Image 1 (cartoon, rainbow, N blue to C red):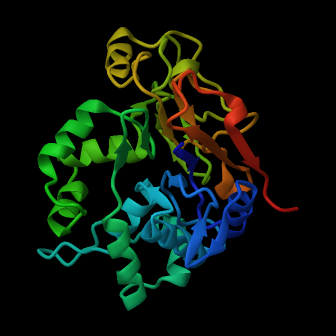
Image 2: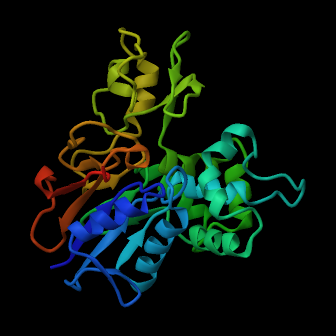
Length: 319
């Protein structure tokens, strides 16, 4: 029986990751963390970097596991941001992601271990550039933020190589480029402009006029159903969402009869729950003191839906 342990955003929390791997039965031997059952391996949902104290150690664990075949991994938006931050436009010499105060603060932990221009930094970025943007099997799907069939179809048409090369990064950095919009939908999720007068203070303390969309919600009639990860102490408009907005949002919802999809990205808090029988977000804010939550999927033991909460392993941070 083939078993996968699906693990979300780590954000440099190497100690928490190794604690989770041990609880799942993995050990570090013969060059990588591996399970004694040769048919059991991990799937990482991206966002290995930034925020936490152990950038290199986290990358080393994931990289060795993927290299030895004891794990697969997809790219997260923080890996994409890093690729853009460290790349320049050959026509202008400017970085593809601005080096402003906000962007540099978000990336500071990584930069402290992997400075700009260093050989080891280039090596890690080369590995990141080869990470797939999604995984799909006959039984399940995995993506960092949002599974969106139309965006995946566009990316398949536009990206012919097995990595994000310079030409592709230039397109992703270009505002309004369809490829940029498609990649950002998968790695950052869809966003919506908030009603006039409504603003969000995000988890980094920045005031925003837009919000992430809870694309897994199938109602989308009121604002509290539409927005994702909204702080309890910040009010939302009580009225309904305009019909034209609702119709646009429903275009990114995930079908109830589709195979299961697993994702991270959304900084959930509280008791883990299913978003639907075939939809599960595993990110419970390990990057800022929350637990690292994994899901055990047995691929050959019959139907994998409905998903079941008893298959979760919740590893709390030390202390």
